[in-house]
Length: 206
Image (cartoon, rainbow, N blue to C red; front, top):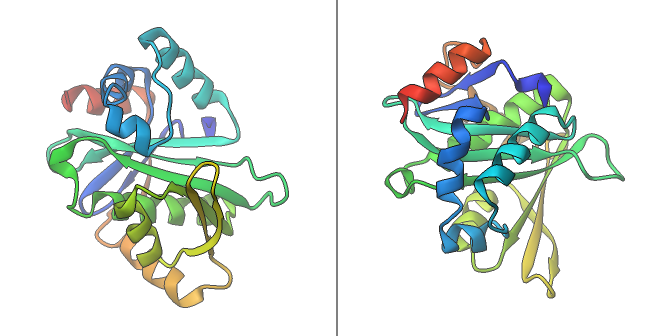
């Protein structure tokens, strides 16, 4: 999505960076991991296909993606995404997060990345409902989303997958908590920067 092409979101532990061409090789290496492919229900792509995908996602008005980086070291940790593909509700988006680097798992990175993204989407895009589709084997993700206030909607036996929802208009108390987590410690939560700055930041993380 071009809307976030020059936006970096800073939290306490993580920064969300627009997914640039300089990130593709790292992302491609992440997606060679069979476990990550299974947990994200993804198919392996060639490096050329990954570059084409990055350009497509950048220009697609229905896809919003950020790379998750460790704010202290600049190392790339994973990604977090929104897909505005829910035809019956234009104010809803499917959300997903992946912490690909093992050294950053179980440190609150996924939680903070989700909260930052949800606050951004709610404030900047008017997103009122978030939908998460999570495989039954992905127990850590199911636990995380439930702790954030997501409630189970349906279960698909074919894909062995749960669909969970968070309605920001209904779950007022939970949303206040998410906003606090998302904005806490961020000097400039939605920092607009140039592509060159984002690319330089990404390069320093390698």
